[in-house]
Image (cartoon, rainbow, N blue to C red; front, side, top):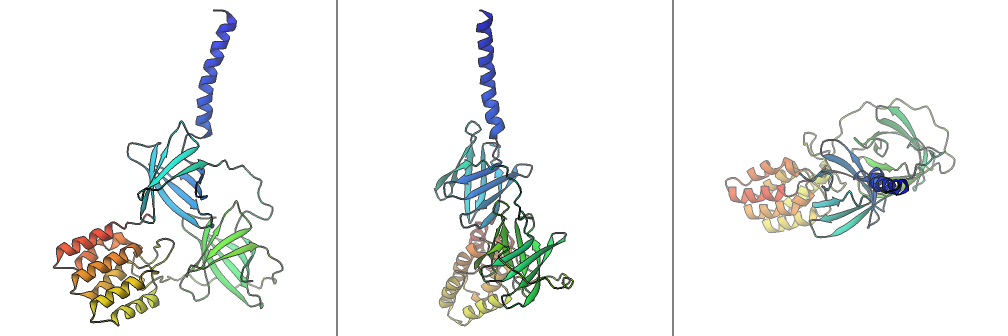
Amino acid sequence: MSRLQLGLVVLALLLAIAVPAEAQRRGSKIYGTWRSTSGARIVISDTGPGGFSISLTRTTGELLPMRGQWVHGLRGTQFQYWYSNQTYTGTFRPDDPDRVHVSSTDGTTSWWTREVVPVAAPAPTGGSVYGFWRSTSGNVFNVQGTGRGGFTLLMTAPNGAQQVLRGRWVHGLRGTQFQYWAQGAATANTGTFRPDDPNRIRVQTADGTVTWWTRGGGYAPAPVAMPPPPPAQPRVFCWAATDPGCRRTRDGRLPMDRAAFNSFLTLVSSARPHVFPMRDRVTTGVANQYLTSYQLTSLLEYFKPHVFPMLEVVKACAPHVVDPENGVGSVAAKFSPHTMVGTQASQVLSSQQVTP
């Protein structure tokens, strides 16, 4: 073999090694940014032993933080995540590093395509939530950081009236999602800020209404001297501060607060002693509401000793319970001494486990 032929063989071997190495460098891991066939944008970040965080942004701008984990024995190849009572399974092939096949328990499938995010220069107007914003209602917000995850918002209404509001980052989503409270309000509004869209903020109120803030937006009255923020006080998000489900959400919704839950109980109990009309009022009333496990157990008291209507109430309410794992035992106990029906009720609630 001549030296020239030997050199060509060595070059071919080096190229065969270099191409897979480049593919591996370019992305033989699941972590990064993806775009699904539905148009949603998915960002996956490694969080350590066997798990990772998934931030899914819908085409509407709604941000859905979820958690995924590798399937046992298939680390690096197959993973699962959960949302809205569905289990999603993603299959990733290192030899096809720019696509992920995703299937759900209801039989639907989709594809994710790796999205190359260019490194851009910082936005001149600011890549943070701080500064002046104008809402679609005409209010002007001056957002100022106070350290330790909190900030104040000086709100100026179109008529010139001003209020000082307090805000804080949502745990684990600093720089992306925050909540703020109006003076005397028990429920929070939620703002979602995307650094790749630095001049808009999506705001969702406690009743589900969505508005948008635009950076700047024109003249804002000069800030007045701001009083010190009020001392932090515990907030009751639902019927009882001791309920561990009060701060939990499901599908982005909080459980009923005290006034809403009392009104719901009044609606149901007003049909007594006719248990089936009571059951129908539960089914209708819970359709657009969410509740905690403790609230469900309190509701079941109104149906005793009619265990089969009680079971139907559990089935109607279970998809709307924000913390089903907290109520498996207490709900089953409400059916005593009818343990077989109580077991069915606990199984219904167990099947509704929510992934934080």
